[in-house]
Length: 394
Image: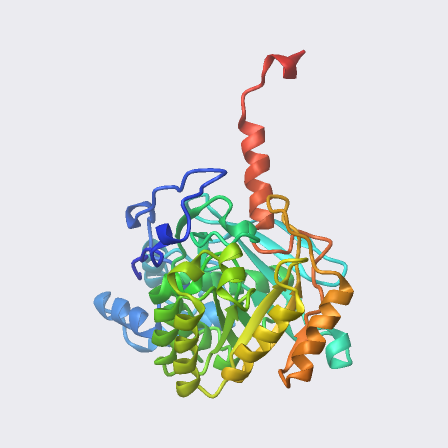
């Protein structure tokens, strides 16, 4: 199993841990490797060490990824002794559903508990009939890469409880398997836009992407996998050198250093000049356009001046822009831009020749924004375990 790596200089981004202290985590707390985090080569090596013939590797992977067996004992084409060995050697179902929420628009949010009682979120988003002219036949799963986040973006609930640990590749892959099992629906696209900074969990990210893309694995095409980053410039360069044709999205949210630094502390470590040098390198290596994610916050980053600066930056690397109405989080003072401000901002981009859209809102009636459902669960759990006071009993 891949060893978890620390986040990229989290202390440069945040010192705040407002709800709880990070839990200690080590491989000693994991009793068994997670099966979904094993590559075909990993499993083949394990089988060889167990003295099993090589063809069993493909059989087991078929049971897991095609037939979706939930227990090794259900893999009935395997010898009973091998099934017992696998059950002793691997954890097959590392995620346990705590709760889910279903929006009127079909968006579904899952909260999963991990082996160490930490919580992570995934969001299943149906394609919009308004965009494609028919009922939703494609679904995107937004997955988490870390428990919490160290990057302390000043609009996102994920970092309010601080950073706890990286997710294992198997914990990442299992989010897709569990979402499909619970919903009964096929996931067509995966976006790493959930809890955490994917590029701060780089090695585990790459292994998870390999498994998601592999024919023997989940089988999602590389162009249907998007990695979103807050702007870890060195890792953008590293990712550009990877052979898979995955897509890159940048959480930009400010077109100047002055504005971006107010809500994204990572910008102090990697200011826009450094970041855009890395993006230029990405464009020199990849055919896929970069997408800028840009949350629209009233009076902060939605001015005509910011729109003009954003247009220049987008044109410099032929990027697309997704404008996202801000989904309010109680701990932050921001409000979403007015509809007129959103339209005016979009017009500036369009006049400058930048491909841009205002993202259709999904899951606004549930805790669909990143980290909100986990935050609610942990807050409610903490309140439930607090000792009663005299006033409570009177």
